Each structure stands twice: as C-alpha cells, then as structure tokens.
Amino acid sequence: NVYSSEFELALGAAQIVREYLMNILDQQTEARILLATGNTQIQFLDALIALGGVDWSRLVLFHLDEYLGIKAENTASFCYYLRERVEKKVKPKQFHYIKGDATEPLTECDRYANLLKTQPIDLCFLGIGQNGHIAFNEPSVANFNDPHWVKLVKLEESTQQIQVKQGYFPNLDAVPQYAYTVTIPTILSSKKIICLASGINKAGIVKTALEEEITVSYPVSILRRHQNAHLFLDAHSASLL
Ligand code: GLP
Image (cartoon, rainbow, N blue to C red):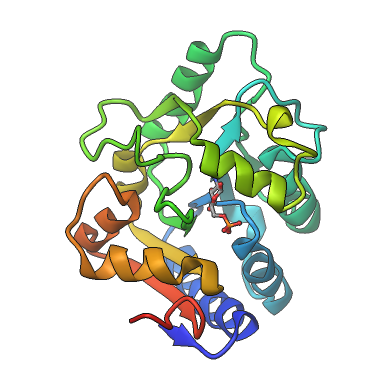
C-alpha cells in the first residue's frame, strides 16, 4: 500500500489494523501483538490509539528487540518507548517486556522465547532498517532458519550511527554493541505482519527488498515468503519502485 505522506500511511495502516483486531477479538478472547519501535512506528501507534474501537484490555503485547544492558528507565530503551507510547495510554491486558538489564542474558532469551512459544502471535508490527534489518536481525546475523526464538546479536556500526543521528544516544560509544532480538522464524510465525517504511532514506532498501533476490543480505526480503505480510509505504520510500 502506497500513501501520499507519512501521516496518510500511519492512518491507513492504523485503520486496517484496527479492523483486523476488532475481527479477531470477535472470534478469540484475547489477541497477541509483537510490537516494533523506531521512529516510523510513532505516528502509526498514535493513530491506532486515537482511532479507538480496539479493546486493549484483551490484548497481550510483546516487543521485537532491546539493547543489552540497558535499564527500562533509560529514555533510549525500547521498553521506555513502549511504556510511554503504548502501555501508559491503553492499559493492555499484559505487556511482556524484554529485560535489557537482566543479569543472565541467556536465561532472559530463554524466558522470552518460552513466552512466545506458548502464546502464538496474531499480529506483528515491523519497521525496516536502512540496511534491511528487521527487529535487530542485521544482515550479518540474520538466519532464515534460525533455531532460536530470541537471541543476542552484535549491532552493525551503521545501525548504531542511526541511533545517534536520531538523538537516542549522545555518541557512538554510548550505543550498546549488543542487543536482544526476536529471530526471523519467530517473526514469520505471526499470523499477520504489518511492515511500515517511510521517507527517502528507505527508498533504496524497499526497492532491493521487493525486486532483488530473497537473501539474508537484506533480511526484510524474507517477508515476500509470508502469506499475510503487508508493506505500507509513503511516496518517498516508494519513489524508486
Ligand atoms: C530499529 C529497531 C527496529 C526498527 C527499525 C526501523 O533499529 N531495532 O525494531 O523497526 O530499526 O527504525 P525506524 O522506524 O526508526 O526507521
């Protein structure tokens, strides 16, 4: 779906998600969503909440990724982002956060993986990194047949630089080198995927992901193999298609 502006994109995606959630909540007592973070999600989440009509008290929420070693109170953490932008506003049934500062990171991966294994995801929101990453499945660590559900990964410097550029960290040294991420097979296990990409910075990767081969060099390209994955673009991110 291509929209004229980022605002139209956010609203269009929110309307489709709202309808889908209302439908599945007619059939199930609860629904589970895997949330993304990043700047592209901001207007979309605002629109979804503002539209109303979704009974958030029947939604169980998870998220895709978190920096290793970061505290929930750190304003750069994805936990902070989601608490402020979602949890405080809508009071979901439950919000399962990845504990960035867990003392035993591998045990934290197992804890989160077990939650996801026992609670299948109805809907997954995604953004796309400029290098094609989804969640923190960077090209260097992405595995389409990953045996793990959640894992620890090393971030690419280009990803760290973007986090500084976006103002989340003061400089490159302040950006954690490692992160937790939900893996690609876990993302693909979601019944429906809503992927958003806006802005001219995403035009190149959007073209590559749609028109080149499906490869871990561009992890987002794997979405073409999912039966129910939807890509939402604005005029800028779609400009090279
Ligand atoms: C970040 C996050 C992803 C996010 C993506 C796109 O690094 N790890 O979960 O979806 O990159 O971010 P943005 O929407 O700011 O372009």
